[in-house]
Amino acid sequence: MSEIREVLARNAFRFNKRYGQNFITDTNLLDAIVADAEICGDDVVLEIGPGAGTLTARLARAAKRVVAYEIDENLRSVLAETLADSPNASVVFKDVTKADDAEIERAAGKRYKLVANLPYYITTPIIMRFIECENRPESITVMVQKEVGDRLVAEAGSAEYGAITAAVRLEGDATITRTVSRKMFYPSPNVDSCVVTVKMNDRYASVDKKKVKKLIRAAFAMRRKTLSNNLSAGFGISKKEAADAIAKAGFSADVRGETLDVDDFVRLSEFI
Ligand code: SAM
Image (cartoon, rainbow, N blue to C red):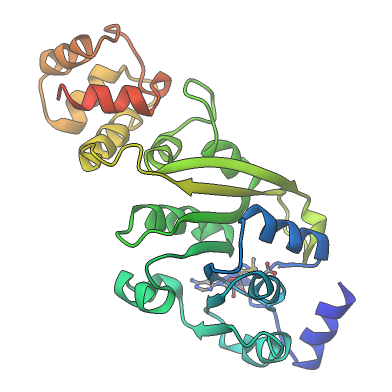
């Protein structure tokens, strides 16, 4: 903790609230995240938001190579200092949302793992972008707000289950690997966090994912409506057509979207 403060002070670094800068101070937690991401010697890691570089240096120790995207130019001198002994780590000073898929592929290659402790307001769009992109990572290990983690691993029918749960499950298996107290960060955020790992798989490779995702979005559009009403609105079909598809897929007429798991959505998509 004092070490990070000293490096930041020495480089006259000022936190920028806009960039959600809460740096991990606990060295055991940093090691645990590297272990959760299952980084080994031939891995390339794409890190988003290296901050003071404490996680980056540990990732670099475990991996073949780390490429990190950092939006804040003011961290240049801090990172030069903290990564001085990590020749296999490089930092691109750029907003990662401005880097297109081709750039990411040039930077990280075709086989890579994504690790990120990001501002919470961009975590969900980043997860969705990377699980859906053509050159998707083998796995994503991210620090997220505890409530977001609970949503990502929720069971169908539970209050936490939502469109994002089903959309992520279409691409991989999400697990909460650890919960993290707000005290582990400097400065402390006002929420608790958890680390989530999504391991990509090809379970639904032969499925029309575009259609299934449209179905998932429609099913969760209005939570209090029945699935047939939501399908009718989302697909621009009559209520009878929606009801027929639901019956053919083997669900009851009054079924609600939030009770269906991904296999159910895939089956239903075949009848629409
Ligand atoms: N990884 C470090 C750690 O765990 O201590 C820092 C985590 S801090 C929560 C988030 C970091 O992401 C900050 O360094 C911030 O400047 C950076 N960041 C925020 N938005 C970003 C973006 N769009 N692209 C790249 N980096 C971003």
